[in-house]
View 1 (cartoon, one colour):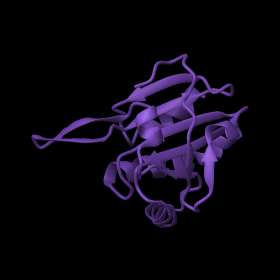
View 2 (cartoon, rainbow, N blue to C red; view 1 turned 135 degrees about the vertical axis):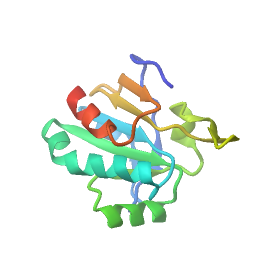
View 3 (tube, rainbow, N blue to C red; view 1 turned 30 degrees about the vertical axis):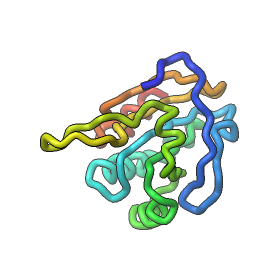
View 4 (cartoon, rainbow, N blue to C red; view 1 turned 120 degrees about the vertical axis):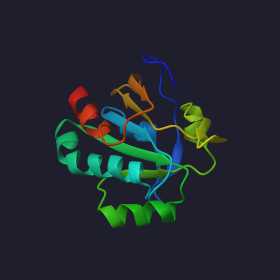
Amino acid sequence: MLEVGTKAPTFSLPDQNGTVHTLEEFAGKKVILYFYPKDNTPGCTKQACGFGELYPQFTEKGAVIIGISKDSVKSHKNFEGKYSLPFILLSDPSLEAIQAYDVWKEKKNYGKVSMGVVRTTYLINEEGIIEKAFDKVKAADNPQQMLELL
């Protein structure tokens, strides 16, 4: 996980509509950047829907929500449509941002060890500095936790 107080790494990734986004385009706004393992899995769906439900309150506070996983643009489009998600989902199959933000880790699942995305959320301030960082996030609680931070 990256240290609080450091400059957030830049990225250039396509969203669920194929539009490429960079961190720089959100300068002047707070960014909630959350990394999650996979579209349409129970925890990831809870987390995304939680951010979706609270989205108007985040926008009132001038914050942008961005979710990143290694799923494809097409997978993100289906995920967005299925749950009416109102925010940006970035596709990172080459692990560009996932590795830059240090969320690609060894995971143990039922005794099997594999590499994967550890659910992590960063709050990045208007100047592009990491203000808060949470790893091993509880999917269902994370959206409310981030809203309270703002």
